[in-house]
Image (cartoon, rainbow, N blue to C red; front, side, top):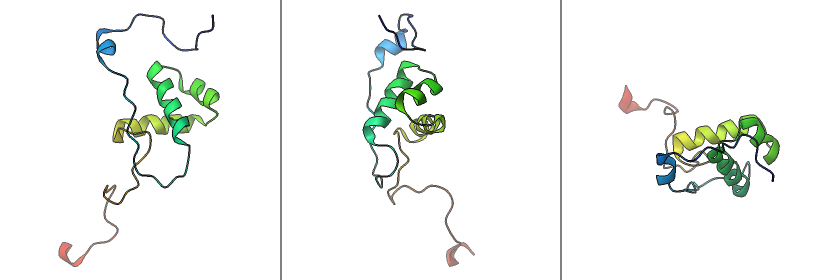
Length: 100
C-alpha cells in the first residue's frame, strides 16, 4: 500500500489523541493568493508532519509559501494574514499632534 513520505507510523502520543482536528478560521481577505482549499490542504499536510519541500511539490506551490502558511498559523491562528482594518499591524504611519 502507498504511504505518504514523512508521515510517522508511530502511535499517537497522549496529547495528540486529546487534540481535536481543528480547521483554522478564515479571516477577511482581499481574494489574492492561494485559494482556501489549497491552503487547507497545506495545513492538513503540516498537521500530518510532512516535510515542507514534499508539501510544496505535492500542492504545486513554493516552499516559501508553505513556510508563510506555517508562520501565519502561529501568529494569527489562520492560514492567512488579516487584512481587515480592525487589526493593526506595525507602527502608525505618521506622528500626530497628540504625540508631540
